[in-house]
Length: 241
Image (tube, rainbow, N blue to C red; front, side):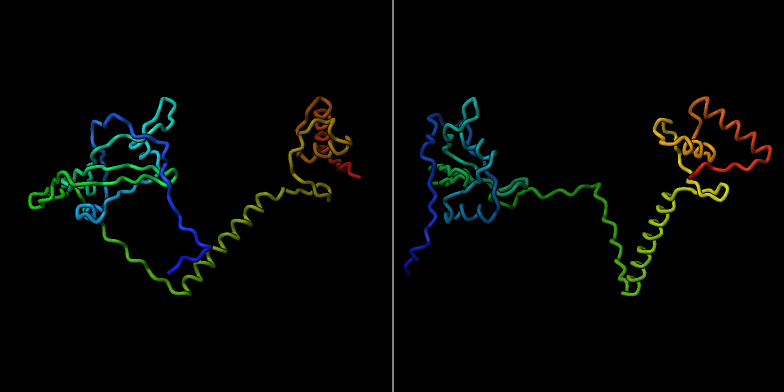
């Protein structure tokens, strides 16, 4: 079957500019893998191991200069493959034929003959230990299945609770109002400098209503006069327009 002319096959091109170091690495490369790939390599069906282009594998497989720039590939002759992380896991020492680096795609490690095998006899393999301090799990509580009516009541209660909370906040934010001589006066602190008031009548009204504390001798004398007038039974009219 011919490939359509408008479909191109993606070809990976290895970085040919990376030379292999002359000095062989003193220790073999160590890689951990899943059982399925371990078995495939052991049987000979899989001859290439792939690793991602990550900082970890770049540090393991690439040589760098003092500035951290990649200058080449490390010279590995053998690799130790391990099946998982369990104690006594199977291992193989395998010949490394070649290592290729594909920038942004990863590494390909070409494998040769199997040199040695370890822990393939599972008769004497260590068993997984169970902690003596392991406490039994507490039984899970059974989830109570609520009817649609019960769910509706819960939703209604939540909505009412929310509305009540909002109304309480509104009441808290609502200013206190008192009536002096038939005039509603908002109880709110008005302790701004007297220069900020356009009219002195407004300032004196706040003093009479108790929403302003006297700031100077003039205001203190005014309040003293107001108190004496109240004692004499004189009705004080707020000086509002």
